Image (cartoon, rainbow, N blue to C red):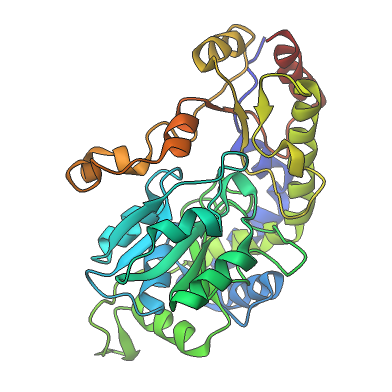
Length: 367
């Protein structure tokens, strides 16, 4: 029997094979491969979906985070407060920009940052707070935004795992000062390679990011920004994303359905889906189906025996990463640290078959 995969990118391609091939052929035939009409059209279309004035396509999600931080005025030595349970992506971007990551603990139910968990981490050196909408669940942004404003701190949304999520106030990516998106192939809206975007309603921030992504140019061959680089979303990836974008809401709905099935099976037992209580809300888009369990290794073995793949997102909290060991040795984040030993990711992607979903549910029933 074939294993149930954690994800299967090939199925997503086959579902849209004809329009994807047509879009790629159009780019190849055009002779325009960087910053062309597909790129410009995607920026407009994605900005509309997010409800923002500007979308700036960049090479990947990590660049998007770094450029977002630079756009709000972060300077070397400034501190950035963020969570430690999202696999170092924000911390990597902060370090690349010469910033100092400071880690806040997370809510034990949602595993997301809250205003209450962020506030103790703020210092006079804090320049920005980066909130990751982890596993596809939007954080409670309004109170975090109020906290940031009270302290004169910028709010950056990390929407890498939450494309298409929206709460009563608006879409993820439209609620802070600036937002970063990733279009890595496994994301809910994934390219056929790397890609990312910075989204904002601020004209000056958008203009700065456009300069920074293109060597720091203010005009062709004239460099005015000292921290420029080459970070552009290419035409092929933009064309692919344009084909996929109209399907995003349907794919997100299917992901919610899958997580809801798992949560229903687990019921009120000792195991739970981290965001199983959010599956009826568009503020959750089911990027990852993450379960909390006291017996992760035993459960992983049971899934493996049944031919169901699983993984851990993420096993090493940022403040325990070797690269930060000397700087964060005294940092204690009890909720983050405990969750890192309990989380287990189950298969969840829009193209899963009913048979595959039921195989996962069957293992859950037997745990």
